[in-house]
Image (cartoon, rainbow over all chains, first blue to last red; front, side):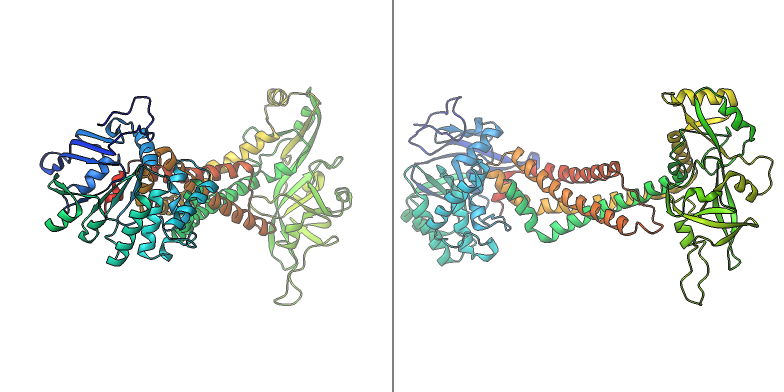
Length: 251
Length: 386
C-alpha cells in the first residue's frame, strides 16, 4: 500500500512505505497538434525498497521520460506517481528541487561531470547544494570515493580520469547524500564491456541497500544480470516485468 | 557553491581571459578617455583655478569665457571699490601677446598683468625667484613648461637640445624688452601657450594701444558677505557681469562644451569603449554560460534552486567585472601618472571612478541577465539528453 505525504511533510523527508516507486496510469505527451508525441501511455509500475530495477526497450519507447517523471524532473499529464509515499506531482517547484536534492541520486549517460572541478568537488555537489559546509562535504565525499575505488584520485580532473573512473565519480556523486532512490540513464553506454561490467558490479555493491532503490535505464543486455527485475518497455507502455533470466531469454 | 561557481569560471581559461580582457579594455577606454576629457575641460578654466585669492570676477557683461576678453574702462575699478561688501578690488590684464624669440620666431604668450601694488593674481607656485621680483625693471615671470619648451632658446649646435629660458634672459614682448626674473609652475591652459606674468602697468605698456585695457576686476568680499548677494549688487550698480570663481569656471567650461567638438569626440570614444566592452565581454560571458548549460542543468536536476543558480551566475559575472574594472582603471591611472610631466591632459576624480565602475557593473549585469534567463528557463531534463 502506498500513502500520500502528509501536507506538513517537507519534500525529501519521505514517510516509511513498503513501495519505493509507485506509478499508476502515468501518461506523458510532448508538443501539441501535429507535433504531439505520446511518450508514456498509462504506465503502471512498482519498485520495491532495496530493489535494482532495469527499464529496457528500444530508443524512444519512453524509458528516459519515465525516470524523469519518477525523479521529479518532468511532470506527468495524468496518473499517479509516488516515490516513498510522496506524490511528486503535488510538490511545488521549490519542494521538487528539495526532493531531488535529498531523495534522488542521478547517474547520467555522459557522466555530466564539470570539467574544471576535481573528482572530490564533482562528487560533493549534492552536499554543497544542500548547504553542507565545504570541509564536511569534502570529508564525506572522500569516504564515498574510497568506496567506489577512487582512493588517491580525489584531486584529479575529469579529463585526467578514464571513462570508468569518471563514471565512478558520477556514482559517488549519486550516493554521497545518501538518497533513497538512484536513477541511472544508460550508465554503461559510454564504457567498454569490461569497464561497464566492473562499474555495474561496483554500483550493485555500494548502492543497493534495503532502504534504497535503483532504477536503471539501459539498452545493454550484457548488464541485465545485475538487475533484480527488468521492466520491458515499448511505445510508452510496460510490456512485462520479469526476472533477469526470463528477460535475457526474451531478449 | 560560490567556490564551485568561481572554479567553473576560472577553469575555462580562454573564455575567462577573454571576458576579463573585454572588461579591462572597456574600463580602460572609458576611464582613460573620460579622464582626458575631464583634464582638457579643467584646462579651460586653469587660469581661474590658479587665481585662488579673489572671490568674484567682474567683467564685461558680454564675456562668455576666460579667454573672451572685452576690456573695461579703468574707472570701473574705482566704482567697484565703493560698493558695499567689497573688501578689495584689483585690476587684471589678460591678453595674448607675441614674444620674439632669439631665432627670430614669434611665439604667442598668455600674458597676465597683476595689480602693481599687491601683485594679486600671481602664479600659484614659484619654481625660481619670487613674485616680488616683478617690481624689478622690465621684470616678467615665465611658466617653467613654456621656458623649457616653446620659449626655449635654440640649441647652440645643430641637433642639440634647446636651452631653457632662465632668470636674467631677455625677451621681446610686442617689441618691448622684458627680462625674466622668475620661473613659475601653472596649471596647463587649454591652448598650451606659455604663460607670462608681469605688473598691470607694464602689461598695458606691452599690449597694443587700445582705449580700454582692463580685462577683469578681481574682487574680495568682506568676511561673512554673501557672494551671490554681492555679485547681484555689483551687477546692479555697475551693469557689468560679476561671477563667483566657481560660476566663472562653470561658465568657461560650458562654453567649451557647447561650442567645441570636444564632448562629442570624447563621448564617441567613451561610447565605443562601452559598446566594444559590452560586445566582447557580454558575448563571451554568454557563450561561457551556454557552454556550461549542461552543467547548470545537472545542478538543477540535483536540486540546486533557481536562487542558487542565479547567485552563481551573478558571482561569476561580478568577479570578472571587479577584476576587469580594477585592471582597466589601474592601467589608465598608471598611464596618466607616467605621463604627468607631458602635455597629456589627464584628471581622474573619484566621480569618474564611480561612473566607470557603474558602466562596468552595467555590462556585467546585462551579461548576467541574458545568461541567467537561459539558466533559469533551463529544463533539467537536458541532462538525460545524451
